[in-house]
Amino acid sequence: MTRNALVPKDEFLNLHGLTHLCTGGESPWLRSHDDVYTQFATLKSSGWRGRETVLSRVDDTRSGIGQLWNVDAGRVCFMPAANEGMNYLARGIDWQAGDNLVTTSMEFPSVAWAWRDLAERGVEVRFVDPVDWLMSEQDLLAAVDDRTRLLAVSQVSYYNGQNLDIRQLAEGLNRDRTLLAVDSTHASGVIPVDASLTDLTISSSYKWMLATTGVAACFVSERAEAVARPTAWGWNNLQYGAPPNPPTTPAFGMPQILEPGNTALLNILFLRNGLTTILDAGIEKISEHARGLAAEVSDGLESLGIEVISSRETASRSGNTCFLVDDSESVMAALGEKDVLVWGDRGRIRLSTHLYNDSLDVARALEAIDSLKPT
Ligand SMILES: Cc1ncc(COP(=O)(O)O)c(C=O)c1O
Image 1 (tube, rainbow, N blue to C red):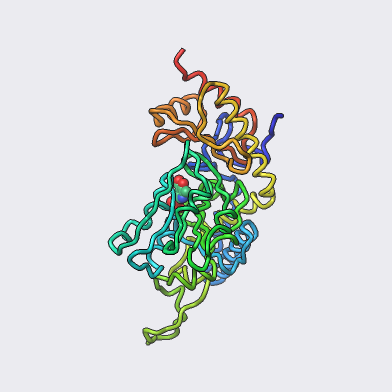
Image 2: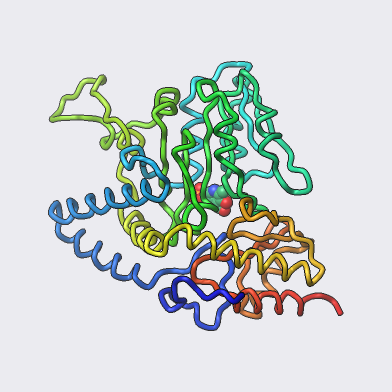
């Protein structure tokens, strides 16, 4: 079966003549973002009148995230980067000596190490190992006990693309005791994300969401809000009036309470535009497409004799398909010489398939990879 792009490559800048399989690192730029920028510039020049329109578009973006993630938009805030979601829990939970949290030893640093200062307070971080590069949900749940305050994972692994079964994790926890926090950066925009199963879901915007850095949408459940207090205050989350204001000035609730100052308004409008592309294409269709191409990548690599470290099961696949190689940076650069863009670092190569990719991209990448093998 030959898969055609779901969204034409022409809708992005600079894809002509390029095999772009590296959205897991950085997605290409939508041409329609140019209009977003021009509109923002015009609105910004219109003082308070423009500001109201910008803020109403920010609210549209919350609604779009709510729709994509199956949650109430009123519980979606915008943070500056995905690491901030986990760091908010690290700072805000009333951790006690003897508490623990569970994560994986294959995690992205922002998920694995947001807790590094907690050791001083007697909190244990439990790193569960994968087996043959695959994480088992059962092993994660087996590491949880009655002192586990949090289970923190990426839905899709940045390292090998495995998509964890978030429902299984959610149902396997005693949720009155243990919060579930998920970094969905490598899932959101390419495969379904159900944040309603979690206490916190956060995603960066510059990869599969087709926008850029500086903004990370974050869902926070009522349970998490009750357990983790806010740790930053500013003009945007306090209900202040004309001075003087008392130190007890009341705070706003969600979502503003976690947005103490201005959010990255222009970047949120880029996110709104990326979301429109994703919602119009339909997340189920995108997911089927990206996973179908991932299967083509995986089968093709195996036929070249390259061992893939990503799952072969559809449900635990994603848009990322990965293999190990000693000098990953050099392989990435050598493929780049052939105008094939993949991501390579820390001993593995990652090929990412998204809505603008097609079977021809996969064939070209496989041919280029094959040509690098010593003869
Ligand atoms: C799982 C995961 N989260 C977050 C990020 C980076 O996002 P941010 O810079 O917004 O924290 C990455 C980048 O590779 C990632 O793989």
